[in-house]
Amino acid sequence: MVGALGRLRFPVAQSRGRRYPEPPHPYRNEFQRDRDRLVHARAFRRLENKTQVFTPGLSDHFRNRLTHTIEVTQIARTVAAVLGLDEDLTEALALGHDIGHPPFAHAGEAELDRLMRRFGARFDHNLHALRIVENFELRYARFPGLNLTFEVREGIIKHSRELPPGEEGALEEYLPGLRPPLEAQLIDLAD
Image 1 (cartoon, helix red, strand yellow):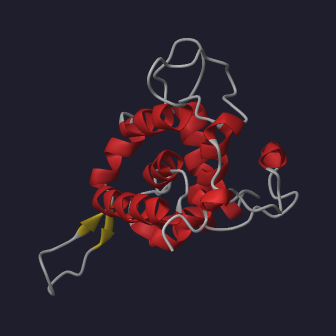
Image 2 (image 1 turned 180 degrees about the vertical axis):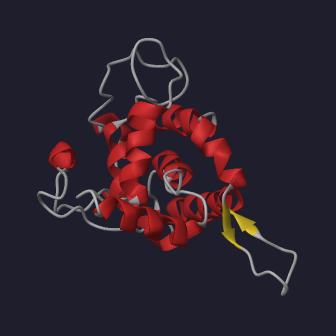
């Protein structure tokens, strides 16, 4: 079983690259750079303050999005290693999989979606995560966002569902209707 899917792993050398080209790093591959950019992102750090599960009166143990994300990352990376998938891509995807969640977990997302529908829009945490990494994180003077690789951006919006054709005109580059690499699909299972 070890390495059973290795022939299907996504090779970092075949990455579609970054929106804004950058020179290669001397000792980190592109997916390792993405992982590090996500770990240092403000949106990632804010996950600590977003409660995921809290049962008042039943327990004083609560879950936040950061602890959940760290656990998903560890599970996903271990499974990727066993299956022979790209561990660095898997780790980057797992670290970014929940950064678009608003406060109050899925109830917060449902309420934002309800409010936005009054204006003909919608709220989806995966699409919001893409906006965060492409626009809202301002760490570099030369470009907006984190300038993550195409594969990590695609995996962030498609790890838990397929992107229906025509869902978002601006998302056409993410190949609507096609599944992302196995590494992104693994995140859905680890989650």
